[in-house]
Image 1: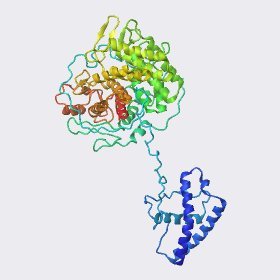
Image 2: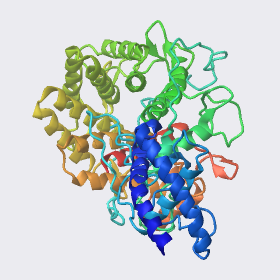
Image 3: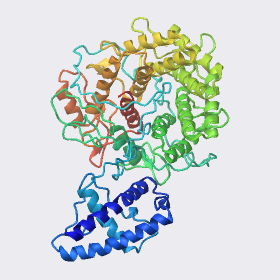
Length: 615
């Protein structure tokens, strides 16, 4: 008993300073010598350690039934105590590797802390350092960059839990409102633009003059998959949300990991590793390389710039440069680099280069964007105005006009050239005066200036881009007129009896409607719109997630219900038995799944991302 009293006295003297040393070392891992104290303290502690080791030896011989073995040995104290500092070797003084006295003292101190004085110091548990959990870095979540609108603070997504969306019993019957009803006016449908028709013009034949940016370590999907989803469908995880059969009409809501999963699939299925370029052909299908048109390159380019992966941005930019017509300083529809040039395609290419510039600060990317915007301004039509849709042609399209305005405003955010702001205002003035339908406030497709004939077809992407433009104009000018126009247009686009709706949901293909999602995202994040749009947007995305995702090829999508797989169409008909939509087939089957489209899935990825942004 006398020995035990002596032991406890010595332990009380020695434990406190050694414990303080361990706490200091936990906060100064890069400066281990800072915790050793003065030479006097070191000498004193060595003397204490020597006496303590001797007492310990005699104590063990007198009380053999008690065990004070080091952690990991039989009889050691449990390492699962929540308040016990981890027994990491890093906490040993680095300059005393052979000091057995220190080792003995450290073992005693560990026992003392566990039994007599549990640690209350927060932050010494491994992994409890704030900010070190994966995905908890503010602003690093994928998709937190608004696609079009003014800079917004990234919002954490809160999942919508409402079940279903009541389908409308009044399908749209307005003629001319279905996409594709405008002969010759759909971008990308130009004869002669089929990939591969230009021998020797395959991408990759032009050496890139742009500096190689450094590779970014973090991947888009790694960021997104690290976020737990509180609203993933029952029986699924946030990293892979399967389409549950569920009840007819029951929607499955988008979780934050879904956009990253689709982004990964884009690279797996459409990036050609052998040639380092995007391939319009699904890699599951056999056949030669299929060159994407520049519109496809631009759509997938925005998914890539939003990912913030610098290497992938550089690779995609290098692909795009193979389409550049150096004489016109604009981008051709194909790598022929001829005068088959479309202004709406070029506006989207400008968006990609501007966003790539923001990610890399590469001045050459900015210069390309400036050249494109100058080209777009040069395409202002004589007479009433508007932006020509095709180089050296007479058709003025609503989409080319609003997309050119958006490109100008995105450049305005960089250089603050007031001429760009004026150009964008002129574009929207033209749209409201000449191309807006007064009956429903939506926009017509365009007008042929050679005959003044108006194409009254209506597409969702025109309204979506217009919303993004109006949000930016309101911010740049401070004029509430633009905000009022945006809200009027948004109400028209959300009218369930309007031209954009069938079965209670937007009826346009994904390669068009994704820009409507982006426009609403900008409007919602501007704070000047009804928050009811937030729920409505979530339901529209849930419809796509539930019925346009391939149940046999998760995280990849079809463009429209009529062109899905038989299984996906069957799920849709179970939910909407009275729908007049007929199955037309989803294309060829490759390796057990229906062939997928590069552009449709890039558009789907951006739709999923907008839901992350608005929350």
